[in-house]
Image (cartoon, rainbow over all chains, first blue to last red):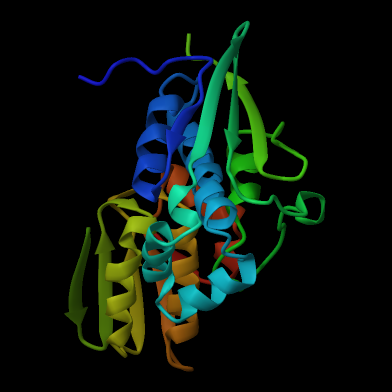
Length: 157
Length: 96
């Protein structure tokens, strides 16, 4: 059995699989685990793909269309300076709420310009933040320079 | 898991369990097929993420000009996510 998730300390993750597993564990502490899991996973994958591995939105779209996105992720995870980077998630309790802060070691992004896509978009990417916000965390906020995202949700009773 | 069957001119992709970033490589290989109709059967899909939505759009781009892409049997959170992304306007959503 895995030990219970520790509150108040940053938990590191590096790969997409680690992000997915950790998102599941954290979501289990929240009131609506399936939605929370999806929302957290989107934000944690962003931290890896766009933050630590510095793959921009346009580049990701091109890689996806060319069928090369997975390979690019694998190559960057093994290459410097990306290989040394970790993302971190910290869960803290605030009354009946849990605050979850996800931080990456990238250079941030112009999050204010990244308005949630509402409407029909043909692009194969760019929906993660909007989904996380709409599905589960309307309070989602980024912290400058954009390498930290903070969400709050009701804790499971 | 993605199970592929062909019925007449249609290729049916039945996706069980999670349809997410980890499904992308397998999904991408299936694009070599050139059916006139794609049916993505989501009856047994319990989870979709934005990577899966991206793959569906790539499938739609890839479909031939006369080609049709139907999403079948989406329910629960999967259906909710598809609607949220306005996929009801871009695909044929059909019941199971």
